[in-house]
Length: 196
Image 1 (cartoon, helix red, strand yellow):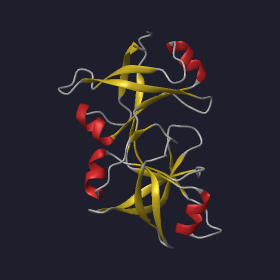
Image 2: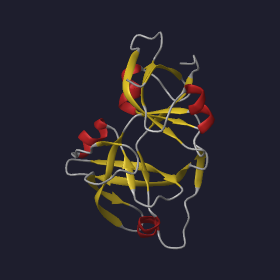
Image 3: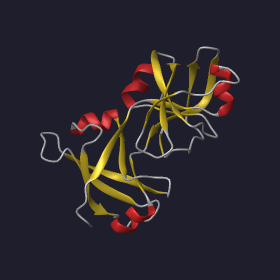
């Protein structure tokens, strides 16, 4: 295992919309407006936001991430799920069958989403050359040491490895996980075991 640090990307709650749902919520002929780039190439946070409404509560101003996806996907934390009163499963991106539903409120309409809300499985993005350097295959699971030297240092088990020539090296975890080990975007972690 090479002793190479991996940058952290803390994933706050966000929404990926399909083209159909974008047009419903924001109007035909409109396009998402870039607020800022994110680390993964080609993706960006938008100025546009929506409100999420569940059986128990509401979370407002949830930022959109573009470009559009084939299916609408909403990624939240377990804490967010408790506020909303829903039970989303832990899933890899795109695996939405049987996931939680939610009401999505935009400026033009309200969408009653039957499924699409998940707690994103923690994962590391690798470009192919980076995966080769680490000896990683697509779908491998590794252990990641985070908060190194801090009072809440911990090791995350079962971290999924995802490889694509569209990716850049980055460890993604949600806000609950980041708070548990007191890390923030831009901090560094290390892999401590390749596979099981």
